[in-house]
Length: 173
Image (cartoon, rainbow, N blue to C red; front, side, top):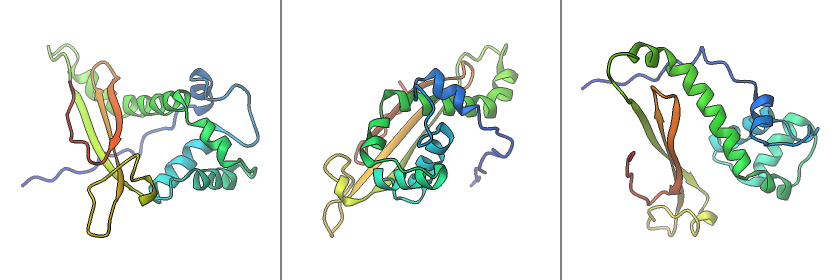
């Protein structure tokens, strides 16, 4: 059986988050309580530790900016603009990682190469109504499934979704 090794992402450079945030309208004016880099770090850190509550994200943001943001203010940041910001960051990183492969495949007659992944993440039980997971003998559980499909040649995101953990993988259309 062959093993798949993780991709070497050590050469990736984080894009200019201020420009992406401005382009996606994540913020209208600069604030000492909020910066795109701190927002991204706080979000990733909270999710990685499994503590992705608004309070946790706001606390993580405070540790980075040294200015407190209320839980409600953090909630108000999660809009289509924050989604556009995160998607633009992902697109930039995917382009950096896969552009050499796309360049090598151009002119070969191959029209599309789709990279797709669905990853699951457990949530605290209080989220079971919104994001149900497969239960266990201790009661309800919560979880989410994140799916992303990326076209290597056109360097575009084809689809992305956030679903309950009980949703079956459907694949790219």
